[in-house]
Each structure stands twice: as structure tokens, then as C-alpha cells.
Length: 107
Length: 120
Image 1 (cartoon, rainbow over the protein chains, first blue to last red):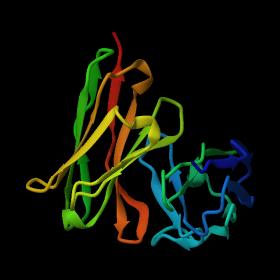
Image 2: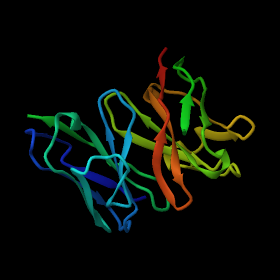
Image 3: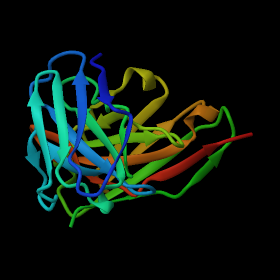
């Protein structure tokens, strides 16, 4: 099965900083990748699908890039409401594996 | 609007079984796959499997094969997930989630989650 590995596992940044989270697939998955945001105590929310397509209503400071085995989620100008854990998930054939998550905090 | 409403919290003893429900509304039930995802306390999201309510076909993560059974009731637009031989490691919040449709398998809509506690 394809494994999904995120880095870092946690980060602390200041309001206004640019934040980048990486997700690596153990095998190529083309662009079959989604990003989810889970705020503390809340249900996960879809941010991005097809590696780069922002879900309707998601602030434009979020963006996704990559294809194949390496993907990034970028938050331009981190805001206090972005404190959350972010997960990538592959959704091509086989198990729809999630990455282990990246916890984002405000410094 | 699309809604997925899950059944209430469960407390079970080790070795027991539990059957969770996910009642859907606001869309054509048979046209969208339902996935189950769990999250142990303080841990990440773990994909368990999916069901196609249209035909009843299922796909489970290898870890859950033989332990989990997903079914769908088209008369009530409800999906069920039964998990057997519960262990303390099955203590988690269980989410059902709907994908976006054919060839759009990302999880766009989520239930509120059901907490399952397994303890003697």
C-alpha cells in the first residue's frame, strides 16, 4: 500500500508568516490528493482537492501544489483562526490513506 | 442541504460488537459513496473503508477486513458500520463522510462523529 508522510509533524509560526506543509507519497499518485483542516474538537473540513483546487469558501491564503509523490500546502499570511491540524489524503485506487497530520500553532 | 447525522456515543466492553449509523439527507443516496474514518484520542485520521450505497459493494482497509462490516439501507438513506471483537485500541471517534461523486472521491461532507469507548 502507498504510504503518506507529512512534515513537519508540528510547527509554530507568527501571525502573518507563510507556512508550508509537505506531504510525500511512497509511490506516484498523480494529482489524486486532498488536504483537510481539523480545528481542535471539530470535524475535518475539506480545503483542497486534486492537489491544487481550492474548495469553495476556503480563503485564498490557502494553496496547494505538487503532483506525483511530493505535495505542499501553503498558508500565506497565517491567521489565528488557522490553528488546526492539517491532513493530506490520497484518493486514487486502493486505500484512501491519510498522512499523520501537521499541527499548526501560533507563536 | 447535504446532512450526515450519526448515532450517539457508545460504551462497550472488550469483545463486544457495536453498530454505528449514519443517516443521510439532502441528496440522492445511491449516487455517492460513504466512507468511514476514525480518530483515536490525540491521534490522526485513519481511513477504514467505504461503501457504495447504490449496489452495496464495499472496500475496506486491510487492517479492518474481517472486523468491520458496512451496509446501506436505501429505504432510510442510512449507512451502518458494524465492528466486532472490540478492543481498547478501538476507542475513537468514528466519522462517516460522503465523497463528491463519481470520479470525485474527496470527502466533501462529514458527519458529526460518534465516540466509541471500549473499556472493561
